[in-house]
Each structure stands twice: as C-alpha cells, then as structure tokens.
Amino acid sequence: MAEYFLPHFGKLQTDNLEEYYDADIEFNGNEIQIDLNFEKKRLTLKL
Image (cartoon, rainbow, N blue to C red; front, top):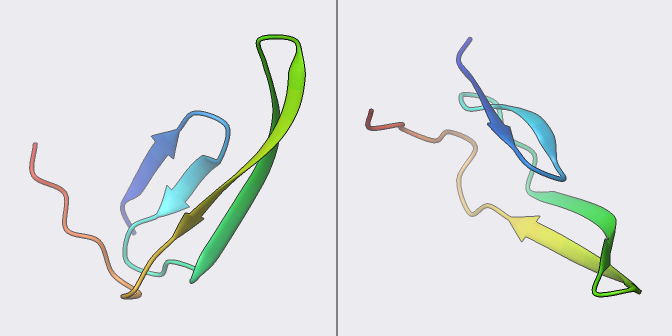
C-alpha cells in the first residue's frame, strides 16, 4: 500500500483514499480550515 505525506493532512493511503479530509491550521495569525476532496478512491503517483 503506497503512502504519500501531505503537509497538514499527514499520510494518505494512495490506493484507498477517503473522499474528504480536513485540517485546521494557523495562517498569518488566523485559524483557518482547509479541506481536500477526491473523486476517486485511488491515486496514481508519478515520480
């Protein structure tokens, strides 16, 4: 199972993705929420 590390979201399993991820971060002194959405359950990495 391949993994990909994405800042603020951590390790993502590239062949078994969730549809939605979210994270709260501090940016320029403000707390904001960011989200990441996938249409498919599998991600192909090109290195």
